[in-house]
Image (cartoon, rainbow, N blue to C red; front, top):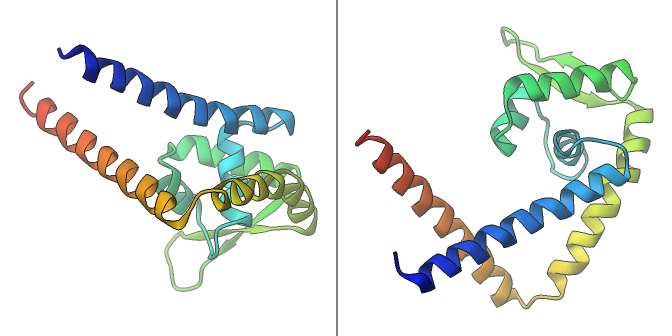
Length: 151
């Protein structure tokens, strides 16, 4: 393997892990798990209505993990599940007043830091970063899928 490419892969993987670590450290400061953080993030920052399945799909989380997080949030009185009329079993996660208050304390702090950070990049830098990371992810997914088909 080319040593230069090997070094670049190592640096890229370290940077991805460092980014993941930043979110992990932030979640821990607020006494929640990483997965709970992404559920809060979905409910408070992203616009729209989300079911447990939507959150699984959005953040590539296992169904059991999201179900466990939501069950705990229900027990704490932070969310309710609301059945969607006309569907067999789809339920939307709704924040309670207590849930909104707690969630905003946790998520808005981090979102505001993200916002301030990305504003420090030029529009061109933001677009380049997003485009290149997206391209890398898609190519890696294809390569792993193709190599797995030979096994």
